[in-house]
Image (cartoon, rainbow, N blue to C red; front, side, top):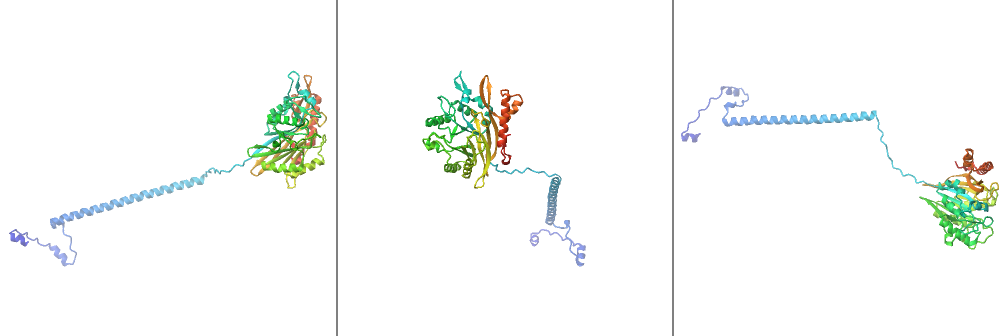
Length: 453
């Protein structure tokens, strides 16, 4: 101010103080904020900025509060919605329970079954040879003989028979006592499905040459020979049939060769208990189940001898799982024996004549032994065993004697239905007698051995 005065500028007169101000101050009250118009210009500008900032600050706070409320409201609504959904699901599950399938993978047990058919002696007498011969064609044919039983062979996994005689392309062909037969019979047996030929007491009827020729013919027809061998090397092999993981061994033995010589011991398996025990031990190394086939027993005796029973017991004790047999030319019973190690095994002492020329009562009868061997994870067992009675029918056809192997019960029914007209009344009477004889003789429900259904 002093500088302005020195320059000669005029000074602005001071405004008189507001009387009310003095009074308020004298009363000890607070000094009020100056009014807007009473402040200097610069102060007035500052005051406006203050109010503007204050307004902006309040607006910002209000916006933040609104935003916070909005977010809170959204979250609250979301929580309510979730609770509602959960409540609905809970109510739905309570009112209706949906069971979902539970899939548990389990390992299926491996089970293998082998269905086997075994029949008794097959050998040709003079009357069988004559019936099968065609003078015009100058050949033999046995197809019609086996046609009624062909399906029993074809429907099995494995089939066996005792095959008598020597087989040779060159005749003359003979019956008892030295049997020599045409290969045409082997043709028929191959066609119906024979797999295994157990040899008999007539294997050496024509010496080593006869054995060699028969072995060659069987080999050419894919029929395995058991109980005889063409070479020493082949004699050491055990026949083992395999289906999937199941192996079944077959070993065979013969009581003798009717006094004929056996040049080499390996050519014929004779019944020797020590050898049989050794063979069974070896067979068990190669297979799960061992079948022993015996050609033994007193001819035409319908019951086993004590010698047969003793032999069977010893073989069973040596480890055989099943014993089947033939030779007596009549049917002998099926029984069970208990071994020293506590096993129970079946023994078929005699399956009878399946096909031959003998006509006396009981000698024209046989059976089809039907059994199943099963392997599971727990072991291998004989699952079931049964039989079908058979009869060798002799009848006239176009004036010539013919033969057929008939399943007895089936052809009794067919005859009564008028579908077996080739049988005479006497044939039918004999057929019924054979059926009754067989069933009464071998049916044994106590050991679960009954006729095949």
